[in-house]
Amino acid sequence: MSRDFTEEQKRYLEGFGRGLGIARASGSKAEAQFIDPDKIHREAQDRVLAAGGKLVREEEAKRAKHPFDMWDEIAANAAKGEFPKGTDVFLYKFHGLFYVAPAQDSFMCRLRNPNGIIDSHKLRAVAAIAEEFGGGYTHITTRANLQIREIAPKSTLAVLERIAEAGLTSRGAGADNVRNITSNPTAGVDPQELYDTRPLGVALYHAILNHRELYGLPRKFNVAFDGGGRVASLEDTNDIGFTAVRVAEGKGVPAGIHFRVAVGGITGHGDFAGDLGVLITPEQCLPVAVAIVRVFIDEGDRTDRKRARLKYVLDRLGRERFLVAVEARLPAPLTRFAVAECEPRPALDRGAHIGFHAQKQPGRIYCGVALPVGRLTVPQMRGIAAIAERYGSGTIRLTVWQNLIVSDIAVSDRAAVQAALAEIGLAAEASAVRAGLVACTGNTGCKFSATDTKRHAVAIADHLDATLKLEAPLNIHLTGCPNSCAQHYIGDIGLLGARIADGESEIEGYHLYIGGGYGERRELAREILRDVPAPEVPHALERLLHAYRAQRASPDETFQAFARRHSPEALRALAQPRLPEAA
Figure (tube, one colour):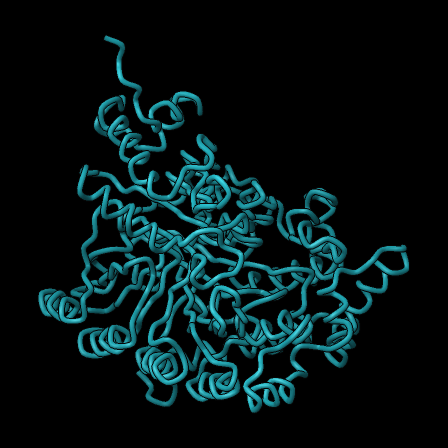
């Protein structure tokens, strides 16, 4: 192998070249936008105003001052040790800086890690930043990303500089931008995958970074790739989900691996991404993604933040009109092709993100490390980096399940890796409950959250592990507000935080949702209970899961299948305490 460029550098150059190719290939209109990247957004805003509409305050803020022209303001505020004020709080998020008061009187900084992959030397750099400028820990997010928390205002500029010096970025990690590009965390090492999507994710990442007009969208935007591996990327919950499929001979298109395109996923608003009805080549994924984003820029709602997502553009235009608008921004029409003509996707393995599993590379395994609700201390980060370097390829893969994977380990080193993990307080084993436990930041670090989700998640796991044993995987998702960062609608059990009246005060509690799923188990969970006090939630779930074990149709029936067999009223009765029988 050539030592001139690493694989990461090769993917970087490939992505950068493809990104430039988009600008050159899209004609005179795109060239004009490249010269004036803000023009496409001003024109969309102008159309709203010309029609008598009123821009929301975030659109007015972007119109008055581009967030990427705020470096001097950030520097001045840092020098004075001051937080931003007014709409500048929103504009700071374009740099990945979130002022999270009143939950914490400090900043959170969110990074971008395309495909959720970070190298060991970069993880060490993040650990050093978290130690020197943050709270000594990071959180792994549900977009396979890292957050550094408890950053003082005087440290913001230093944090951004150190991130850049480490070869990382937080640019566009928040606010109205394309968020972290995700893919199957085992891409490139998964024995069953159809396509290694890592180069596609990196290419899109660099195209976004190098095209300023792809920032400042009507609202945030999520993109994910699924190459057919065992560990889900949850592409069907994204604004755009690219899914690898195999097409057999005799179908009227070249046989082999292609991609389906699904659009409009936003489970917090009640929708999974819907298939667009086309078949594309891997090389078309990048230009198609950019074309869809451009349609969203032109058509997205800039007057109502609650409806400023791609789903509502699709609802208004319909899929065929939307597809025509996308094709108008591409060199040629896309191939219409029924999804039923594609071979079924290889099965997902809900437990494959935890533990040791064989790779496609002979003699190599990967290790899925269980993390307590996605939290990593600085010593643990350094320990993981050391393990990845000593026993693997120096590659750490973050997952949407808030854990991490170390890949490329020799089979003979399994015991040594287990011992090294134990030394830093981590493990490659977890119960069925802990392996599927997902929790948003909660009200200790997010002003929108009604509850302390991470603490409550640990309490739920402690209680359930002590009172019952589950053989099959179970997903419990806790989210502190309706924004649903933890995607409570797709959990077997979903918990939505709420403030509950308790006399003249309020206490923390949850609304309980049951029966969600994703992929081939796609289903939105149904609400069965409201306003359950947080201390009562573990007991309600215990009752529900004991009933499942006692009443399931067979030992193989999943909890989701059990939930589907029962009405919300029946499930509610199973979760509530039994009244004492009359004498």
